[in-house]
Image (cartoon, rainbow, N blue to C red; front, side):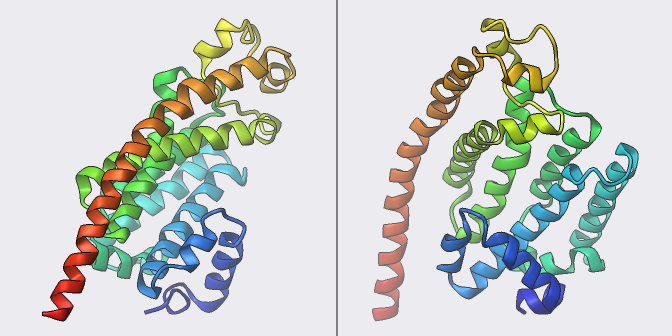
Length: 251
């Protein structure tokens, strides 16, 4: 069943249009059709719940309740029911064994943005946020890729955090405009940038460049190093699996 059949043609076109602006779109387009549809379904879920966190429509309590609606429908899906809101996820969940806990973790991350505007979180909170909004998506994705869980989840841990921290640096101005700042409090305090908790005022300080460079060197680079090692391990695993399939087909 295609995405258009699952979520309706207009919705499928809207998802594809939004995905086309994503850096992952070309990679998804190159995947086999079944895997591509599963990845588009995961992407559609992430976009839908991210919009609840970011669109500012309704009170915080109302947006939280919308996220709770997703929790209820996901729970029902895993109990064998198919609520309309999550019907587009059903084929991917069934075929690839996507875990409920990872979907719920993504919702936990969205709820962090709904509960309050995050401003200068401490490092532990920032790491938790990155796990919820990025690494959890990676844990869903590796199931579609057919990777073993141990190396796959390790890859999701490191790559998800590196990508999310990169997004944070990229979107500093955009986030500050809506009252958010995800740069870690410890780094801001070291640079004397945290006397007032006004994101717009903080990012206007000349010291902010040093804070961003530190996040890049001590945050992104820290996760990229083990990622490179994991990637080599995974490449060996994929090559062995490919050879196994070829020998099996020739037997």
